[in-house]
Structure formats: C-alpha cells, structure tokens
Length: 300
Length: 337
Image 1 (tube, each protein chain N blue to C red):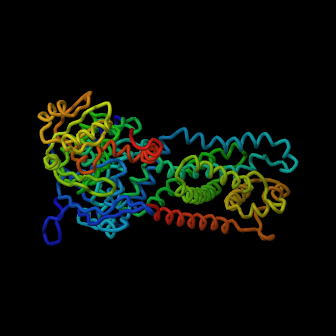
Image 2 (image 1 turned 135 degrees about the horizontal axis):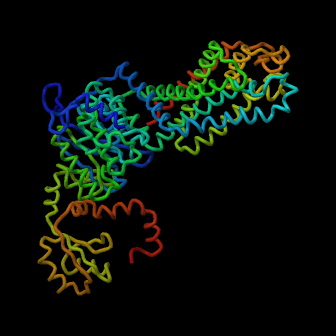
Image 3 (image 1 turned 45 degrees about the vertical axis):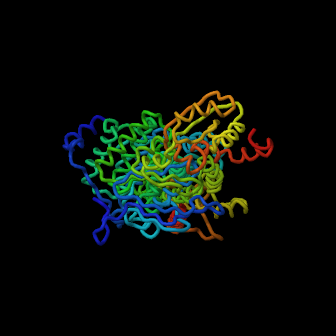
C-alpha cells in the first residue's frame, strides 16, 4: 500500500488544491472504448479473485476431495475393472473439468452479486454496449477458472500423469475453452436471476447432474441405455472425453485397460473425434454468450 | 464549458416536456414540464412515492418515458441515449460501489468504463477525491468505509468524467445530520468549482433550502416550482399549531368563530394566519375550548408543501405507506375520532 503512495508522489501528480481544474472529456463510443471497457471488466474479475483467497481454496476443496479421497477410497473395489490403472489417474481428467466448471460458475455468479449490491447499475449506465460488459465478464470468469485449472494441472504427477509439455498445452487449451463456455452458460442464467440464493439453488440443480452424468467419474461405454442417452446429451461429456483421451494417450498402460477406461464417446457406434467435441463446446459457448448478451441488452 | 447550442445560444441543461411514465395502470409521473438552467442547483422535493426517482431515471436514460420528451445537456434522452450518458454523472439512492475494490480502483474503473483520457485519470482522480476529503483513504477497500464516506466517494466517482449535469438521487438519505451537512457543503463547493448543473431529489425539507430552485412534486405532478424564498414568501402566513383534547371540535370552532380552515397534520390542528403572535390571544379568548399547547412558526418549505398539497410531507409519506391501513381503519371506526 505504501509503495503505491510513494509512486504517486514521485510521478509528480500536482496537488489538486488550488490548482486549475482538471477537465476530462468522454469520447464518442468507438471500438477502442468498447475494448477498454471489456478490459476493465475483465480486470475487475481478476482483482476480485486475487483479493478473495478463501475462494481460491474453497472452490478447489470439492474437486480435490473427489480426486484424492474418492479416488483412493474406491481403489480397492475398482481394482478388478481398471486393469491395474490407479483410479485417481482415471478420474483425473474429469476432476480437472469440474474444478474448472465450479470456478467458472462461481465467477458467473458475480453478476448476481453485482446486482444485489448495486454495482451492476454503475456498469449499466456507462456509455458502453451491454455486450462489452458480458464479454468482459465471460473472459474474466474464463481466466479465473483456467487459473484454478492450472493448479490441478500442477498436481498431475501425484496421480501418475506425466508432465508432458504437449499434453499440458492441450489440457490447458481444452480447459480454457471449457471455462469460457461454462462462464457464458452461468452468465446466461445469472442475468435472469435477482437473488444469490436462487442462483445457488439453480446451480446445484444444473451443475451436479451435469457433473455426474458427464462420465467424469466412470467410463461412458457400456452404460444402461437411459444413462447412455443422458450422457450423450450432457454437454460436459464432450469436454471430459477429449481431456481423458489426451491424458490417456500419454500413459503407458495395457490395451485391456485402455479399452475398458478410454473407449470414448460414440454416436451409434461412431467414435466422436476430439476436434468435433471441442468444436461443440466452443459453438455452445458462443451461442450462450449470444443469448446472455441479448438477455442483458433487453433488461432495463 | 456551458452547454452551447448549434447557433451559439445557451441551451438549458435540462428541458422536460409533458413527461409521463406509467407502469401498467399506474401513472407514476403524470405529465411534468420544467427547465433547468446551466449552472443551477435544482431540487426535486416530495414524499417517497411522488415520482421523483422515476423522473430522474427517465432523465438518466435508465427508464423510457411513456410519453413526452426530455433533453439533457442538449441531447434527447431516448434518441441520443449515449450522448446523454457521456455528459451526466449519477449518484444513486442505493450504493453502487464495489466494496472489494479500493476507493482508487473504483474511480479508475469508472474512468475506464467512460473512456476518460488515460493521461488525465490520475490527476482528475486526485482532484475529485481531495474535494470530498478522501484522498488519504484512496488505497483502502471501500468495504471499510462508513456510510457517509461511501456517499462522498460516490459523488467523487460521479464527477470523475467531468459531467455537465450531475444527478443526485436522495444524496443524504440515511446519513446523520453532520454528514448531511458536509455533503451539502461539497455540493455547493462543487457548483463553484466545476461549472456544473446539479439536479437532485430529496424529501428533507430543510435540505431543499440549499437549492437555487425547487420543484415540489406530489402524486406524479409538479405542484409548485420556484426559488425556496419565493415559495415561502408566497405562503406569506405564519403557521399555528394547537393541541387540544378534541381536535374535530377545535376545527369546527375555528371555522365557526374565525372562518379559518384548519387541518390535522402530524397529530395536531394546524392552520395559517397572517400574523401568528397577534392571533394567539384572540384564539384563547374566543375559541371556547381548552387548548393544551400552542406554537407559532414562520413559513417554512413544509408550509409551502402543505399549502399546495394539503398535508405535510411526513403525513404524505405515511399516507403512501399506510394508505390501505388507514382506509380500513376509517371504515371500521367511521372516520377519525
């Protein structure tokens, strides 16, 4: 804090008292001013996240519980089915996805907070497009969520996943995409909701089923028909699957284990390619961003 | 920088013509007309629910008028929304600061949202923060600020982009008298320094005295508009308040014996007379009813409000909130007393 004061003094900002009035002007709206607005909304999300260290920890607790406690605890019963692969290794890609998902949803919730505490109004009356606010929020949420993802990526060694640079880059790209789309999804919902409690309720109702159905914790081949249908409809499935495929392509395991654990998402027997899956996440994210912008623009 | 029109003539800061806002069947603002000159401190006075905030929201482009038109800083509030927004500063009734951020971060964010020239942001920030006496606290999180400090910071933020018109919606609501006074000092100083037009709403009568001109609003309409002194002079009568054991009998006696029309306001019989001090002896001699207490006061804005609306502002507010209860009570008891 003191350093900031000193820096300001040394740059020689003239004292305002008695000095001529500093008059500024607000320029007409332009692409540059919109980009500036997007940037500051994005930065605000980062500043808030950084100042909220408890949140960094709390949003990671649940995924890490799943990874280490559930993974270790169920190891003995799952040993027969995993063909010698550590259960923690198997669920690692899925856990990475939900860590990102929880954080992204939490970031989106900040729109509801902003509304409750009045700050949203400050942004709504500024001479900028509503879309700039939404885009800034989504990028901010995505950045914050990816940061959580990076923490989980760092833990890869603990669950026998090698630190391969290409794989890490791929995982990072995928989780960035997921973080963006989930934030857009969260913002789309948050725009309509006026109270934090309702938002949390809706989140519980949507996020937990999406997480359980996605196959983050189990292989998606050979499921009962009803669950297969639900699984293929769950968008999160298409984030977990390429992530798992990427991780497993860097593991040295038996073909039997590979077949049992990484058989992948199929549509009527056709293995959906990773690129298509990633593309779906991106398109879904952009569509939801569009809906969020539209919703936000029509609210008074 | 005065608001200058295309032909060089001075354009009023705010021009409002036949402004109406309805919410479904309810008309919150029922056709108001007024102009605010550049550099004026203009107050909107009225009880809660009179339509002040709705009017301010329309002028700030936050609500669309149902009918009529308004220009602010020379721009139409519907057709040139962005131009209006670039030229106005807003301080809302409810806080709109980010408590997680520091005071300086809140102002910086505002400057970025409004696209203020980057090289001037630091200087301007210092100027507005010194004006409200918060420069020393610029690096403290807003969450640690008291209510009065937050309101001052909101005023500073509203000024960050050098607006031509500053809108203050109940800037002193919920603050203690001392803080209210200091906020008013800032507002008056501001007018001196910034060549700015200030439009504000309040339901504190005493505060309206600080304004150059005030408009009294009641039930969605402007019932009086002038300088506070002129309005008080128009009333021209002292206000006499008496406490009796039987108020309705007292009102009847006043009408019968003096030809005075009295009303019950804030629980006491109230009426206006040309010279209060001279009237009191006659009152005691001729009323024929025991009087427990009497007070005489010079006309205030309360009296102005009363002479135009028939009730005090506090009663009008109670009336808004307790309207239903009162109707029910009257039905049950057959009127007051």
